[in-house]
Length: 256
Image 1: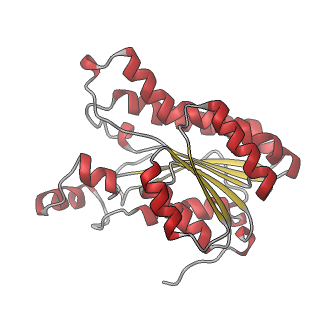
Image 2: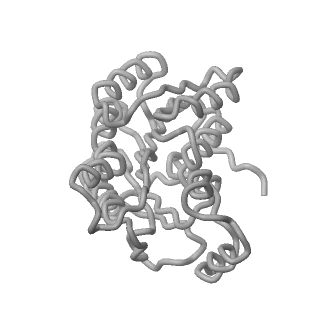
């Protein structure tokens, strides 16, 4: 199947957090292929530099190293990029982490760290892009949740709380912002084959593959590109009356 082109995304300004790896990186590539202008934020300066080299001849990309917990820095980045490239049309709240910690061993400091990195920043960044979205009377915000909390995945209590909270946040924002024609949706990936998962959690071998495909209705690995394709569609006018929804992309594991 050929690449789907959404003509309305050409020259639209896209902001993506957690842009250097996996889903964020694939989403940036996908929007750039649509002719969009992409501003990306990530803490990993090494991977950002690699991405910058990949797009060094593309004037539509602007990548900035920043910690999403530094709200003043995020504010300044958004102000600067909106002056240069115009209001943010599509916000992809993708940044997050899923380090496994058993509930009994979890400290309050680690709990807050997980909530900051997986939920709080979505509130702050969304608030920062909201004024200009209201002015133009249009906008799409896509929040990244997860199916982990739907499946009782072990040692992820704080991650579960945050990613379930993302869906609650999404519903509340959709309700409050719909009158401005701003759409807010969530995407909940299942077991996605990303660099982080390969290195830190799973060893891809025949047994792991068999386990994965036994869980799924469709025996095929979910890739970052699969998630990015849905995010891009939600950013386009093709989804203009879809808001407050959570789209699960997991090959058919959980039932909402």
